[in-house]
Amino acid sequence: MKTVKVLGSGCKNCVTTAKLIEEKAAALGVAVQVEKVTDIAAIMGYGVMSTPGVVVDEKLVHAGGIPKPEAVEKWLAA
Image 1 (cartoon, helix red, strand yellow):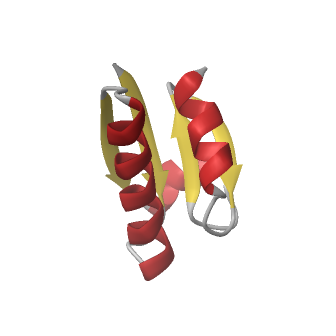
Image 2: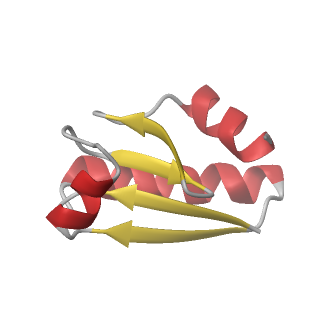
């Protein structure tokens, strides 16, 4: 199971990003646990200055804006 953290304040882009990850995981048959991280100190701990940020298995893979669906598929397949 992959652990995915969506870093952000809970804004629309953050919610959309989490939903996109869940939908792509379901389509690919990949088990994921999506966690929303809203604590500013925790977000900055990953070095993210622009949200939403995405962390897959404790590795920062994206920051700033909604990720492209192809990128999400690549993260989940790795």
